[in-house]
Amino acid sequence: MNKLLFTFIFLFSCTIFGQKILKLKNEEKFDEIIKLENESSNLSGEELYYMGYAFFMKENDVKAIEYYDKALTKKFDNPIVYFQKGYSQMFLKQYDKALENINVAIEKAPLAEFYVEKANIFKYQKDDVNEDRTYEQGLKNADKEGKWYLTLAKNAGNFYYASKKDYKKSEEIYRNAVILFPEEYILYEKLIKSLNASNKFTEANEVFEKVKTFYNQKVLSEDYMKFKNMAVDEFAWKDQYINVFKSFEKPKNTLESLYKVYLIDKSGEKIERKFNIEKTIKVEKTDPEYVICEETKDGHSTYPIGFKDDSFTLSTLRELVTDVLNKEVNPAASIKVNK
Image 1 (cartoon, helix red, strand yellow):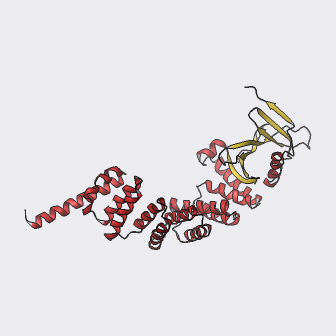
Image 2 (image 1 turned 90 degrees about the vertical axis):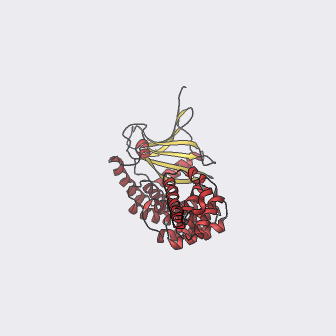
Image 3 (image 1 turned 180 degrees about the vertical axis):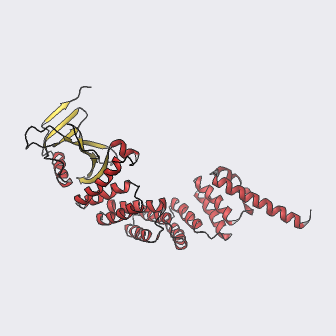
């Protein structure tokens, strides 16, 4: 075999091998890619990246980094290589190295995904200052399309809402996100909660009424349609949180609920107590239309406090529920359920 023919066969076999790697990667057959490691010396930089990605998907970050470095050595100078290398280093808790590589990726291409994971590194390090800075930069510089920008907006909004208690900032982020992603209905919920956290009850109710139109059009996601309500408020009682859900349907019959209120246990994982703001029977004009009731293991308790009509604000609801939790008000009537 002459030298020219040998070179042709060699290059042809490398091309076929490289195409095989790409095909397996697209088919997500990462085990099959890893089996080809011994034949990897002839791979291009891009194909070496695929090899590294296969190791990453099999949770072998050390080997993944090894092949990302080989890809860079072969001049595959793509931002995704730097990002994936930093991503693997993040899982290995090599945070400083991870930031160096993700920063390179961002310099080359300020993608929302890169900002999301950079912010996560600062979250793991409990570095609020740099997490804040990363969200600011990401929301400003990243392409405002696609699922990763949506994730960036959600994470940023939650950071300012839950960690910083900066409800004005979270409101701003969610308002902008709703404009960009009008069919992502969870954003309306988060916006409503941010507004109510700032005691902007009228504005929050206006957004809720808009969501009600989506409910009536039957376009909301499955859980909203199934449970017929949406989370609208969250407030603290001592060292626990209380979640408030509002019904999309105004109660017509006795015992139907306008609001459901849940006291979350100290672990933050379970519901400790359940309250309903229920429609009741009005005998006199001065009687309340809604009363606070509690679901218990044994049955149903009604408290001698309520609301004249449905025009009350969440501020009043918080106060009365807090009175019940502080045992300043006792049940007026309890109904036991026989099991």
